[in-house]
Amino acid sequence: MQDIFDQRVLCSDCGIDTRKNYVIKDGFELRILECPRCSKVIYHPGDLKEYEDFKVLKARDFNVKLRMVGNSFCVSIPKELIDFHREFERELNDLVKLNLDGPGKISMFFIGGKVYKKH
Image (cartoon, rainbow, N blue to C red; front, top):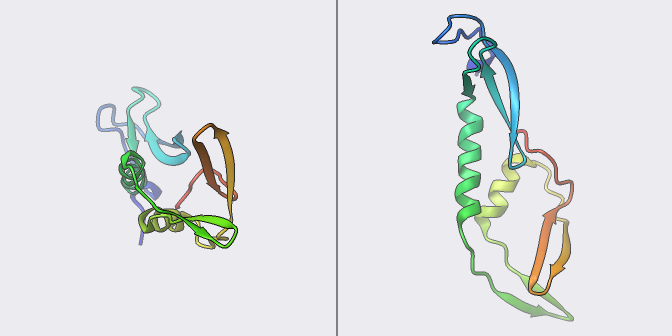
């Protein structure tokens, strides 16, 4: 499938060629076309949809269970979060990094945290 961003695109206001570039928002690399004259920006629709999906998940609160398994505790991670992560990381290593951030706060990171590029 051919991508519109692989084609020559003219600015609708100025009529001159736009330039390919990218911006980083919340760890996502979003492809853009920008006009060198008027600075108008056009976001890649696929990248924008992925970013919007991320913002919806980020805004949700998940209530999960904490269980005792042997001498450790286990937290269930909602499927939506794993599915979203797997869209970007095809080879999920299933390893995460845990940090104690403060009283009552634990952070968990998928190993290899980096800017998400889906293209």
